[in-house]
Amino acid sequence: MIRPPPPHIAGVVHRAVPGLWPAFVNVANDALAGRNVRVTSWFRTVAENRALPAAHPQSQHLIGTAFDVNGPDRDQVAADLQRGGFIIVRGYRDGHVHAQTWPAGVAARAGLLRAAGVG
Image (cartoon, rainbow, N blue to C red; front, side, top):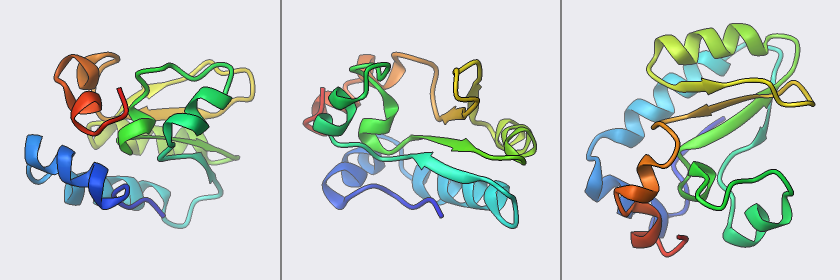
């Protein structure tokens, strides 16, 4: 189940994009409901992000607006998420699907990572 990140992060995103969290959470959880998938990564602290060799330093995981899923139904989930407005990234060696809210770099360029104290 996906939910907003900790309040100090969620508040920054909410002030910049009011209404994002209900839409994000509803679309994500509707796509995941009843599917044979596992959320393998969602909100990450800066330390958790740095510990992952392939993680981008400006990852949307740092503000909770990206998550990864894996499992037999991942392609169905990805299709539902994409229809719901998420950007889907594939091609990872372990086969997981990455879903994010904005194109790469947008959250950082908009100042959301800096405002949240993570970038």
